[in-house]
Image (cartoon, rainbow, N blue to C red; front, side, top):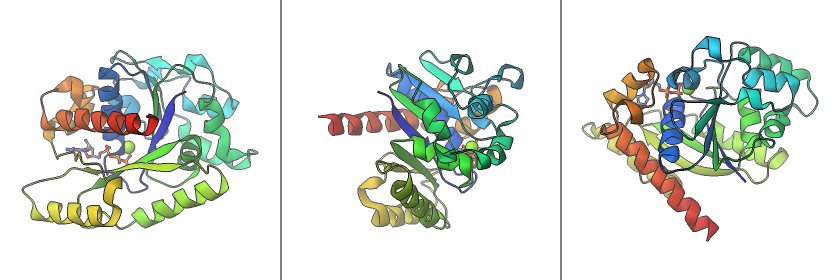
Length: 257
Ligand SMILES: Nc1ncnc2c1ncn2[C@@H]1O[C@H](COP(=O)(O)OP(=O)(O)OP(=O)(O)O)[C@@H](O)[C@H]1O
Ligand SMILES: [Mg+2]
């Protein structure tokens, strides 16, 4: 069975998509089969994997509208072992269309329950707590929360934690926080370390030991349609995401033993 993980934070620009792409790539580099699901109408994960708009149909929108899985919506990427369901142009409309659907919180869950053969499914969520994010969290075993290392990092996380609690109570009792990931860490900036200490004091073991540094190669890679790991594997950012994949697999191993 696949482990389904949402990468979510309703705050914008904290590194959800960067984490989804580079964690997915790092996991496939250690021979895991990965399905990346782009659940954000902005489509940054699809673009970042080098998939142009012309090649996105059918995508997540079609699966949501038809309310069933279709193998044709799964596309190969340039990374061996990493497939994607893209965010095609209409995905934004599905937020509205889902409102009238019976059991509207379970649509993505039902779709993903029909995908087979993946070790991990990673869902890149939009920066909102709307129906696409709710659907993603209902479909998931756990959630990775990227937090940007800045002064307001902890602000807003309480509403996410509260949403996770509500989803557990109402739809998905097994939903767990997989981990909190500090992103765009700048070791030269003392504020960055203050924030890191604060977050670790507050959330303890839930926070990954691995942190992601602010790194120019990571921010350049999407404009080349490549994960940072392919763009420059030796960059500090790529190495950090490879370290994160190791940490996640190790944690997984400890749970399964
Ligand atoms: N480690 C990093 N170093 C440098 N730049 C980064 C890093 N991580 C992310 N960025 C840049 O920060 C911006 C926001 O990152 P990203 O798109 O991953 O965030 P997001 O949470 O998915 O945003 P949104 O909420 O809009 O979906 C992007 O321009 C990205 O290239
Ligand atoms: Mg994003």
